[in-house]
Image 1 (tube, rainbow, N blue to C red):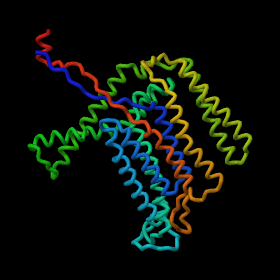
Image 2: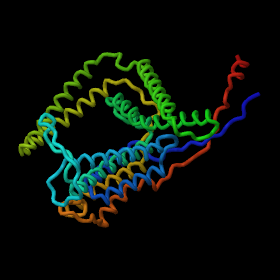
Image 3: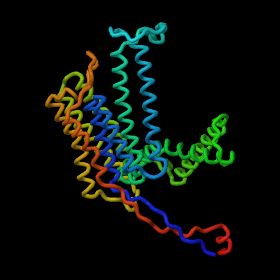
Image 4: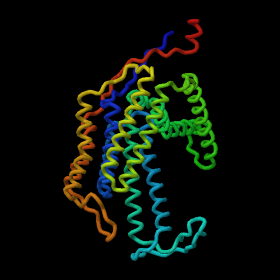
Length: 375
C-alpha cells in the first residue's frame, strides 16, 4: 500500500548572501565608528530584529542568543581582569587583597584598588565586542551558507568552505545537545531530570561531533581535496600573493614613519598583487557552479542603503558630532543624537522585505518493506 503524500513548507530567501555579507560589514563598521554604548545597543537591537524576521529554520537562529551570551560572558571576564590589573586612578570603588607577580611573569600587581573609570572603560570596550559578535551571529542565522560558498571567488572556495564549517560549529552543537536531551527524556519516561545527567549528555554530544568530523574529512578526501599538486598558475599566484603581502607590510611601516607618498605607492602595488593572485588562482580552477543565484536589483538597492549607514556616520564624525564616542575621563552619561540614530536605522532595511513561505509536495516516503516488495 503506498504511503500518503506529505506536504511541507519551505522558506524562500528574499536576499542574496552577498547582501547579508554587506549588511554584516556595514554593521561592524558602524560600531567601530560609533562605539558609544547607546549606539552599540541600537545595533544589537537591530541584529535581534533581523534574526526575528529572517532567522533560518533549525539551530541557526537558536545559536544567536548563545553566541551573544558567550560574548557577554567573555566581556565580563575582560572587565574583571582589567579591573584587577589596571591601577592608578583616583575614583576608587573598593580595595581587594593584592599580590605582585615575579618579573619573569610581567611583574605587575594583581588586585588592590578597583577604580570606577577603569571598570567603565573596560565595560564599554566589552560591549563593543558583544555588538560585533551579535552582528556576525545574526549574519550566521540569516545567511545561506551554501549560497555564500557559491558566491565566493574560485580562488577562495576551499577557504570559504572552511569558514562555513567553522560558522556552523555552534548550531551543530546545539542540534546535537537537543537530540541528546530528547533521547534522555525518552529514557526517563518524559520526566525532566537534571541532577547527575551532565556526563550522560556530554559524552554523546562529543561523540557525535567526532563522528561528524570524521564524516566531513572522508567526504573531503573522496572529493579529492589536496590530492592534486599546485599548478604553474597557482605557484605564480603564491609568489604574487607573498610579494603583495610584503608590499602591504612595507607600506604600513612607511605609514608609521610618516612617508605618505611611499606608503600609498606600496599599498597600490600590494592591492594590484593581491588582485593578480586571485585572478591567477581563479583562472586555474575548473570548478563548475551549479544553478548559482544572481544578485537582483532589489539586492543592489538594499546593499546601497545598508552601506549608507557607516558612510553617514563617517560624515557625521567629520562634521564633529561628539556623541559618537564616549570619553570615560572625566566620567559622564553617554548621550544620543538623532542623526547617528537615523543612520543606524538604515540597517533595518532588510526587514522591509519578509521571507515568503510556500508549501511543496514532498515525495512519498519509501519504507523498507515497500523497497523489499519492489525488489
